[in-house]
Image 1 (cartoon, rainbow, N blue to C red):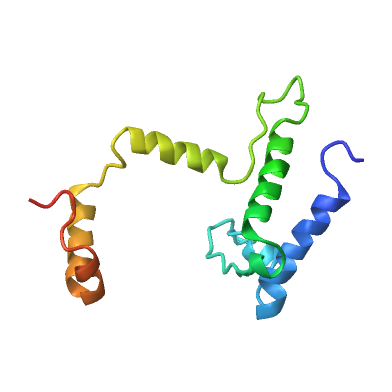
Image 2: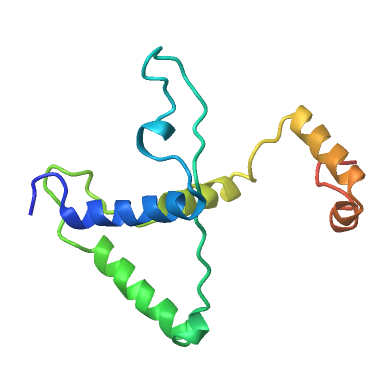
Amino acid sequence: GEKTAGYKGYSWATVVELLSTAFQSGPFGEDVCGVDRKTGKKKPMPLGHYFLAIDIESLCPEKEFRENAGRLLRALRESRKSPIGPGRIWTAGEKEYEAQLERETQGGIILTKALQNQMIELRDKRPDLKHKYEKFPWEA
């Protein structure tokens, strides 16, 4: 294998790029770099997106899938670590999940007064939200 990357990772990145651009005839490469190469100024990045929904139950029972995925992720995290690495192997979503748990133990996130007011205003404009959020925790 290569020292810093490999053809398999490159191939997967290419698949993602194809799915995010080819289906919509969207821009790719330099066209989504965010910088005008002639002027050096920032420019909008017209990114493409691709979403895939899989009905797990059509392939295997959900419980079995969760067990299989759990075994795979645990095996990745328990892999031999590089002596010069950070000491931990993170899997997708772990850092965000830990940050969420930490915020919850601290009482949640801080909402500025301006954001609170915007949320109230939005709720009051939309009947479906008014029914769901009759009263926010910060409202007297």
